[in-house]
Amino acid sequence: MAEGAPAAPRRQLVPFAALSASYFAHIGFFNPYLPLWLQELGFSILAISLLTSVQAATRLFAPYGWGALSDRTGERVKLLRYGATVALIASLGLWLDFESRFGIWWLTAVLLVMFTHTSSMMPMSEAAMAHLISQGGAFDARRYGRVRLWGSLGFLVTVFAAGAWFEHFGMRDFPAWTFASLLAVTVSVWLLPDLKEAVHADDEKLPVLPILRQRAVQWFLAAAFFHVMAHIGIYIFFSLYLDSIGYSKTMIGVLWAVSVIIEIGWFYTQGRWLPRLSLTAWLIVCSAAMALRMGLTASLASVLLVLLFAQMLHALTFATHHTVCIALLSQHFPGRLRGRGQALYVVVAYGLPGVLGGLAGGLLSSAYGLVSVYWACGAISLIAVFCAWRAWLLQGGLEAEAG
View 1 (cartoon, rainbow, N blue to C red):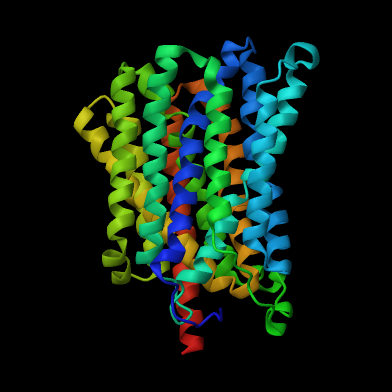
View 2 (cartoon, rainbow, N blue to C red):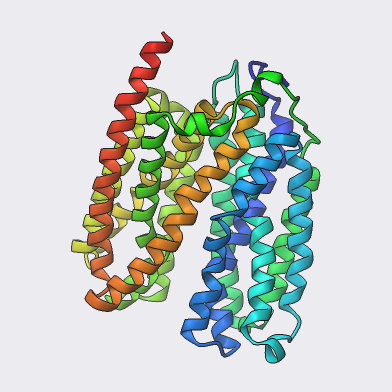
């Protein structure tokens, strides 16, 4: 399908919605409960920290490697099928009691294989989907949001369902949940339309390095890096912080649910709001909202209504920001560069911030308490605002030149 062809019919997007739902359903139970399962196996806190960091570490190399391969071959869907199938088979290793013989290294190897094949799934699937939902070469935020919201729903369902299951039956069924959720992912990728993007001679002449040398692209990626690093305060430390200031486990779950529900609402209606500002202007708004969210969380988290409002800002700090970044990537990395662009975004905006932010946050909270993480994240948000402002200025210049 040519880059400027009409957008795909809805039936072709249904399998992408199923993949989004199943993938984030897997993430919704796996990421929150992996540390608890490892704890039940008897691993120390240090060993648990090492094992849970494997995912962020694979995001430093796997997404770009898979993205580059998918760009060169155009076979994004086939590579997704391969990755999901290998991850599913690798998950069987969680059932094997080899950690008693090989210690931490057995689980490290199993998780490394799994994450190497799953950490690139969303970049590749979104690159393939962006190819389908483009209309006349323009990214269709409304159609993208209607697909992506199913991922939020999947996450919301399993984070509650798995929690109730593990509360009642214990953590022994964690490997079974892993296999079942990855089986759903695998079925979803095999239902995707068997797409292969055509090879264009012009695309072959577009290496990624000249695009990365553009100042507008550099400031955009810098804005994404600092914005997501500020979000580490939510991704890693939020539940611990709320527990430390006296919130119950039930209320912690409610506060997580509020952010996901507001995220779903934004994804469903974003086609109405996004055209009101330019994409880079939205980057500024999102990072400013992040600074406000972190400031409120640091200073007034004991006031439930204030914290609920802060959680509702997730519509801007995550949902809007993610859509805007995907749209900008489609602009800066067109055609067969799209896979590498998506992968670079994962490395820069999730891999590096995940490793650096998690380590720095752990050291900071150990020295000054968990509240210090949120003050630091607020300061990092202001850096993201500056980077987004620079991207906005430079993007305006590029558009003026193009006009």
